[in-house]
Length: 459
Ligand SMILES: Cc1ncc(COP(=O)(O)O)c(C=O)c1O
Image (tube, rainbow, N blue to C red; front, side, top):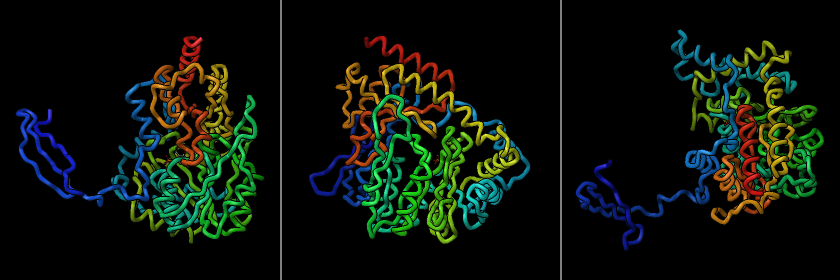
């Protein structure tokens, strides 16, 4: 037990607080000091109210309620490929002491060279490893450097909803103004796919103004799994060119695309290379999200702006994990035309998991949207609405109430998609829950069992 305890109370005087130190053993005040803690120390207004992100809140929820299966956060609950984890072990136990020290700030040379080898053929141009690629602390920091490196005070940024929740915060951090446009389902029939979620072209065109600086695209999309088609990308690209704006393309799920869909990099569309920053993630590529290595690639004039942000906040990413990702890419490059290459085998591994989860959800009263990419399923839960009493949950949005109560009753944790919408459109996410399927088969089977049990109790 702590011997001392501090109690902070507001004093009658404005901006002044009383700090009282109490001896726990004697239960006696030792001292009281009056200190000025003015509004100066509040969270800066540009960060909003400083609410917990959905990740922070739901990791805590998982820790508190220990649901039998956690299909919330997007990461595998099984091992990454052996050659990937072995690479890190070899580096840790190897004979090169410099691999434990700082490396080149903008990206470990072996890693940027291999990234260039992977992407150059895919984008149809020779990527300069030292001037057109930046290695970052996960895709998160690539997004941060791209946004903070380009968005100025008062600049508008177009964001497609639902969106990966940090985009909004980062734009506001830079002093920019997010302008949101939701993907909307064309129907709510059974067997909907993510391709049924579309943008209204006129609505999109109407968002562009003189102040628009950037559009953020995410394909394959989290949480819907939408893989934007060439025609859809052309509409976006034409608007970007017409209004001379940047496209920040978050492609972290680039290797998880289910046949017959194809991942198209918007940077490869005519006139788009010069205005596109593309973001990738080693965490998603090699199923090692905890390594937090990501990257961005773009032309050198744009890259310089990302580098300015990166060199002053992160400076350099961990050397051992960069070296391990570099070696892992070498293995994949050596078998790039073989079906064994992890870039393709991962999708083969995920497809039956996707189909199993979709079937399980359907059989148990949800209406899932079948994803064309990524490893999430968004499912409408409203048909279960009369089986579950949400009145004990106090959250503002229905999907938060549903996912919390469902985790407590059924033991299956999902994420509330309203977290991926702006304040004015949160209602569009409220009827859904997001489930992650990059999980062990036994955990997906357990999900089926738990959903069946829950349903039979509710009959
Ligand atoms: C769309 C999207 N972008 C970026 C990220 C962040 O990736 P990383 O873990 O490499 O920072 C994620 C992670 O879930 C994501 O879903």
